[in-house]
Length: 331
Image (cartoon, rainbow, N blue to C red; front, side, top):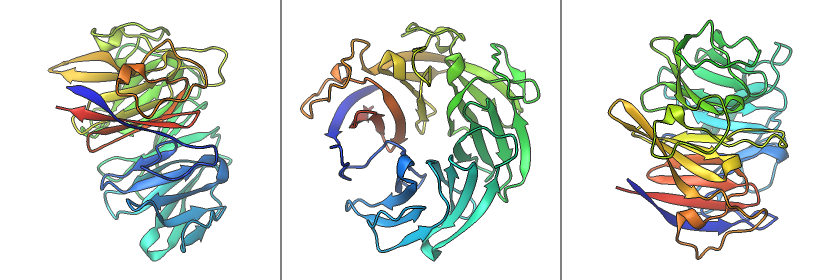
């Protein structure tokens, strides 16, 4: 499997919507694309015609004729239900999950975690049964709810910790969880950033296993077993460790190794998982924008990868300074 650089788009400071926008924006399983404006408290569905079909949230950006007002604060993630095709959006500023039916212009407050010993929610993702999984970033917990918003499980006790061996739901500990995604195997993949690791929650066996990392930071392991690899660190950053993960339809894992300034891929080969670098390089230049004419994935400049998304052979990489880099899978 190889990756080639499909295109680079340099967003200007005022952000022109074009060619998709991956920073706090995601595709659902049907390929619909959503833009999330974290600091402006709104999100919306963006069409292939470079227009917004609708928007929703606390602020109306006046980009569509349809806007749904509700108390959305710092949106983090949007998912589509496999049961009724409703959307859910995580509202990180007030620790709420809202449920939307955009075609009917309806919304409901599905889960309210305010006042429930929750520090800061991140993603909200569905498994194939329609259950909802939510990560607490600095709270070091993962919560499971049924489709109606009733609590099922809480993994982690809020204290940072790490286990190399498989561990049960009851005993597992995490450290600063930046990202979670459901894989094609219906297991939950956890970017356990404070431990410089990726963990897998086996939903059937109710066990948590280590996939990537040793618990220590570094830049080691390309071509080797992912469990022996290390991921980047910057102790001077508020958010140390890697910031983003995504998965493709085969279960390959992509890691935005933020402080190594590269994208790593974990490929499953039989029972082994091997890690490699597929884009970027550690010799980055702060604040340098990428040239739209660049063709070599290893020459792109990634000072700070902040989010990633995969859909239909394309890997979207969003860099904090405003570059959107798209890699294309070549079989």
